Length: 131
Image (cartoon, rainbow, N blue to C red):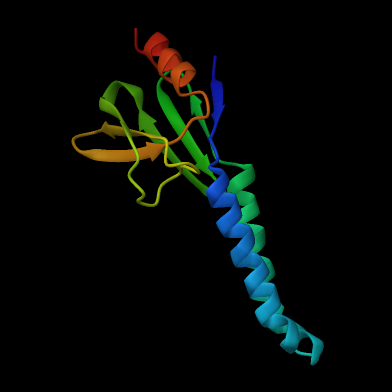
C-alpha cells in the first residue's frame, strides 16, 4: 500500500513568492499597456510553474522506494539503500517547501531533502515498510 505525504509549506515562502510575482507584474505593466503584451508572458509562465510545484510536491512511500514529486520533477529513493535520516534546516534547493526538513542519505552518499507536513507519520510509515 502506498502512502502519500504532502510537503509542509512555510508561510514566509508564500509571502516572498507572492511579493515577487506582484513586483514582476508591476514592472511589466507599462510594457503591457503599450501593446507589448508578450513581455508579460515569461512572468505568467514562471508563476504557472511555481503554482505547479506548490500544488504537486509530495512524497509517496511504497514497498520498495520513496517517490519524491515536485512539479515536473521526480526522484526515487530505494528504501533498502537508505543509510541515514536526519532533521535539518538546510536552505539548499530541494523538493521541500519548508525549512523544517528531513535529509535522507542513501546509495553511498547521495542525499535528498524533503519536508513532509506529517514528519512523525512519514517516519513511522517508513519504519513500518523497512521491517
